[in-house]
Length: 117
Image 1: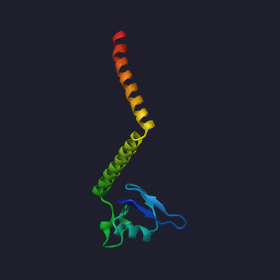
Image 2: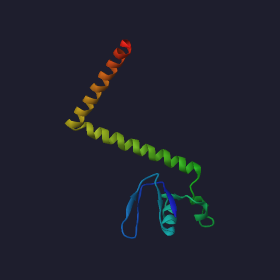
Image 3: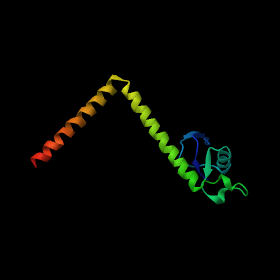
Image 4: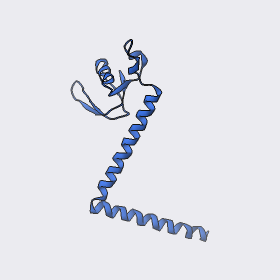
């Protein structure tokens, strides 16, 4: 049964458990899918998978859009954190300065190349 992960969680497997990120679609056993949906960790993707009277466990278009937005926000936050951590090292700071200098040189050369043409 396929579910859309709404909150990061661990998916228990028969041999190995694995981490599931917000926005991932995972295929799990029916009992696990229902338990994760009831706990608010995910939504069922197919209406026919929901037990009678529990159709609220199925993801609506609004739920899908909100989860997609949350996943994008988490990704951006992780990238910003990784960049900030990189700047704290001498090598990371040197790479930032080199990239800035390269951009400045390229910007300075572009108008000169356009004037020659």
